View 1 (cartoon, rainbow, N blue to C red):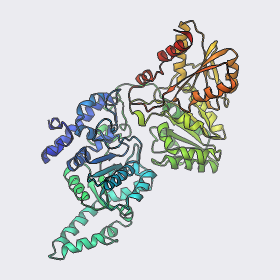
View 2 (tube, rainbow, N blue to C red):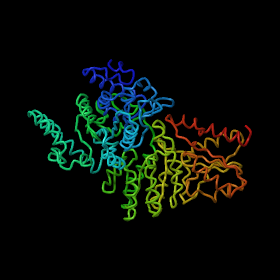
View 3 (cartoon, rainbow, N blue to C red):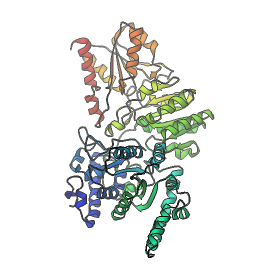
View 4 (tube, helix red, strand yellow):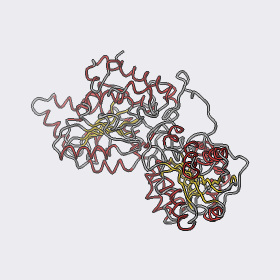
Length: 620
């Protein structure tokens, strides 16, 4: 096998042209086989196999800098830099990350997991290189989906002033996670259909060069002319008008074509954008038919693409059903997402109520302020977003929504630990940054029924409201307890004495397991579902303090500024006889791995929490 010849970085440069296409086929087969067992980002990686090989033909690692936007398409890069054997433990605890990691290999230039960052990072590398007199090459690879993010344009605007070489590769597959939307998508679509332009430009250039003595000068003059041939063939060339040299479009599955155009790009003084056309899921029929489903996939059957095991409804599914019902009942309810209609469960709402569904692209800041405008216009916007991605719009939530006290609902999916995607995707900070905002109400449901009830409360509540819920199967515990949602009020689930377990959202399940373990030691603990993190139920805690001298707070959020610290600070002033123990994620970034494993490592599983309680207060 040709793939067996790849042992370390730069080995691909020793292969013949004939071997390269075989290598591409073998890499695809390797990825499909391994990801069918481990899960991972399949469609995006299958789409960039030839592109990655071409880049590795012209770059030398680890000296040159290759920066992947988002980073979920770096699997072929990892194979070509000698990490093939590590795919057996891809995204598993102690194993290889599914994203670029500088600590993992010197061939990874930038740790990333969020969108639209690669051009900014690459531009920083370029200036650092030039200021220090170094000569390595810098390439940033950005998808057309990431170009819906405003940060990319801030960087492009800045890059236009460069006088030294900087290559930007636009990986254009007409998709982000789901289908792309907006003006840039339409613009690139027009460029795709103008592929004949590349042939025309080449033919004209070659013809001029053949003119004795003056041909070469004519070509140079045309290149220097602001209104070049390109302006006549494709009016309004955005990238060239911004000051970047535009090359392409080029077939992203033709290694030799891409190799030649990359070599040309390195000869340009200044910033260059190479437009590469690829197909997401290339080479695997199920992924080509359903690229969104295979963006981040669980283990699956190779023959059919069907997931290896069926699961019970997830919190996302419950949210999806609730939103569909709201669409029927209230014509003022509208839905907003940032390029995640599938991931957030809004597809059903979008299909049934297309006029009230807004996908703004990978632009979380815009999504939030857009929702503020919708609210001021008399609508009831629900912004569905992953916790990790809402971080990108903290200022907009604070300044544009909370400061104006607007009725915007934030449905925050993937809150807490998400597992295999690791530190860039864990939703560990939302309770902290949302709780600091005046006028914001923050909730977390204990089970699937409470998610539904909290959504009803939030849509009827005329002020900013956020409810956060975890990834994965929706818990069905305490199904017989469905007390009405009252603003700022907790829910007593089990009454005991001496010690009170104050749990937030997903940690109610853990707290109930802890309560049962304590019972085995003769300790009758009280269990409270706090429901609200802001405002938390101070009256209930004062009532509990009359018969409980020990509080244990449990949350799936970083400890700093979280629910536990808020309770401990308040209780220290108001309840001097109460001792508070906080169970939360430590003040650190959490690696990738199975969620249950991470719980144990962080001391947040029921056994660890029980032992902490027994050791601290009972000498056991």
